[in-house]
Length: 105
Image (tube, rainbow, N blue to C red):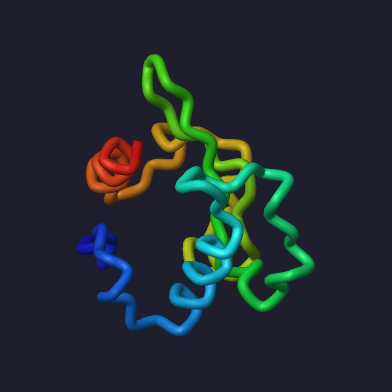
């Protein structure tokens, strides 16, 4: 199985949904810091919610837990992995995802 997952620069975004999410995210950043969870208001981005995945990254050892998986993501993947850890999801692209999360951190 191949994946389209990769890290790109903001200027390379071609998806209107991803661009909208990036603009929203940037609007919530203050003083060069990531936005606080309280700054994110789902009612401000209802059209994006089905496509969102919110993940919690635990530091040591590094583990990724999926806190929320949007309905379209569930449909596209054929399963709901909300509240599951990455290593428990059996994704064919797990090594790639793990590397993306490592680079993100």
